[in-house]
Image (cartoon, rainbow, N blue to C red; front, side, top):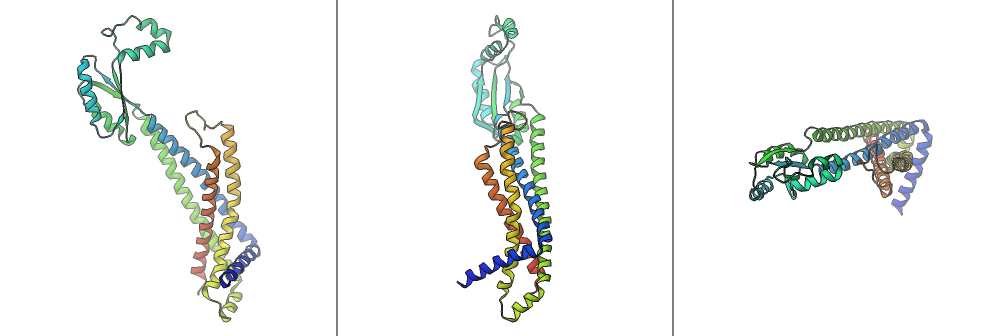
Length: 301
């Protein structure tokens, strides 16, 4: 009962303190709100970028062209050498016969059909190929070089330059979001710390009386920490509403895709609920950390 009474009193005092220093509390809540909105946007962007990056990694394919001079019985030997390369996904290596490729090209265009329909296997300049996927896309360039060293392979293509550039851009965006969020969280924690500091100074006489009547350090500290917790919860309400409504509208407006069809957005539910939970936790942690810092630094007990 004693601890429940202390807890109840701390909540009551923290709520009173928020309204007693309303202008400072409002500044802290506003800062938390802005920070958490940026956090929500960053989480959505980071998740979408990560998802899109994985999609790129999944779809990027190396096409290795086999010389027409290679005999059919030697093709299996080439495949064994490809499978022996470390970064090659051994389950994602597929041989494509030149005549199958020709058939697909003729099916896709009447122009191709008119040119290619009378070609025999010996006459066709089209090459047999291997379609190869890698385990780690960051080392795809080195893998291509290894493939091109294999005797009988004339070249290997995968869109060199463009893939690496896209991955690098997305990685930069993700890192920028993280740095921005961390910076805003630090600023918010300091602002809350200053708010609690003013509260401590305004209640200086009350704190002295509490000491004289034998109140423990814990009894004195808890209301200030609870105030920070309360500010964090209040500051998370608007970002949660903005996240749920904003992301749902965004998803519906773009029909589940962001700008282009291959950048798919996550289904709103339960995705926005997970983000909302993260925002509440971050708000509480930032609020309590700011309060704890102020109590530790300015409350000499």
